[in-house]
Length: 275
Image (cartoon, one colour):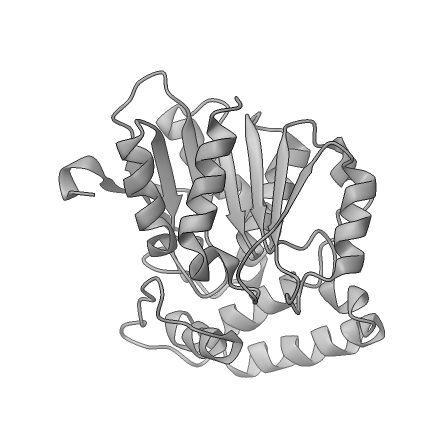
């Protein structure tokens, strides 16, 4: 996509600047809102945004708080799931985006679920890639470690509050090829304390009793070898959302959003034809 078709913008939420990238050349056409995963940023979705423009769809992708160019203030309460949802709602309100289709990848998918349940900004659809709706440690049989683990990680975050860098590494799509590579990116792309607070967030939310409040069409994209999203969790989701569509990706890891871009884009385009 050429630079004149996508605009770098930001919103000052009063709790820091949140940067986002907008392609809105087609008034009246649907807008796809992309949410990246931990350690990443909007570049995860640049290829998808370019192809959507070719098909005359609008799109928006952001750098979540703590990521990319967005605010990295070291205040723990600013890295709760509800704050990410509020940031996104503020952006959509500013841009007058009505009934978007949200595409959330991993942690970004959990933020999208939170938005959909609250329904503060009605959605036209929800596409979730490698996304948990509850503590993945419980589904992996080690939920009893959550409490002590969170306290330990929280203590590490406190001890690392001193750490800062003049410039943080800016992840580019496709660089991380596995879990540990992604972890390394996380340690370079944001303050270590922020990274640790976000890890705690991934085991803190629980949508099991509320996810059935989602009324918008939902598509889940997962793999058979995702160490974070187990088959048991998928079965629970199928019971709670019987009308949702479940697709098993051709890729063989958690990184379906980055390692299987063409497949994901094809699914998004197919979804758009149904609304």
